[in-house]
Length: 124
Length: 157
Image (tube, rainbow over all chains, first blue to last red; front, side, top):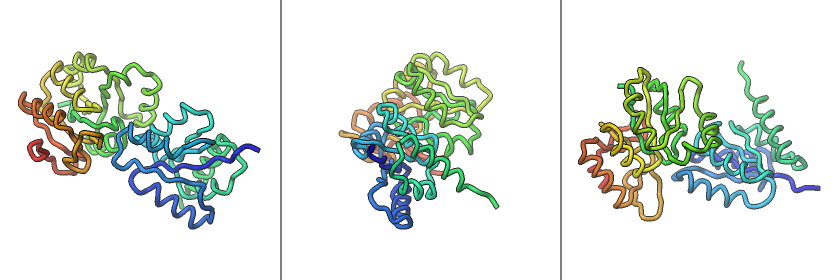
């Protein structure tokens, strides 16, 4: 059985830490998600921070917006490695589902997370 | 009027530029001046994904940008000319028409640089280059967003 993907939440300022903290607190699964912030980073520095967080093994990177420095850094990383997938527009529901889906490949995990994230957006 | 902002920002096309400046100033085009991105289709496609359809994104080398500067300034749409570092801005200003105002929007920490404001770090060499721009007539200020107060170059010493 292949190794389940970890998740990296890559976002502006303190957003990544807050999302990971609350996903762990609500979902009760610790250690699947790692926060990475772009605070104080240019493109090169953010790429290095992300590379350090990626390590080895399959990963789904959750970026906050489908543009900007976080997304670009994620896409650069995914271009280099086939075991990395990127989901943009990260939200709490997609993370809560992701941490419980250990058996999925990065591709399946990313696809499912994107679906769950969209599913959670409603208007009343 | 058309080019309303000449900005140095090492994150280049990102939220603060596209949304923070782009929306309140009703920007119609952004020119990213970068010799590397100008010849990299993959990078260009990636940057295009981050820009709303109402904003046209152009890519240019420094030489191409200098050549096309007059045309952009005559464009009826509001535009931003964006560069990733001080050297590129200096090269552009030497080749193109004079730039009235240079905006320091985001230059982050690197070895040899010291913090001038939270979003601008400069080495002594970079500061000297900016002083040169100012001596040639450009008003150089640090300002991350339109709602922030512009900080004159002299205050960044």
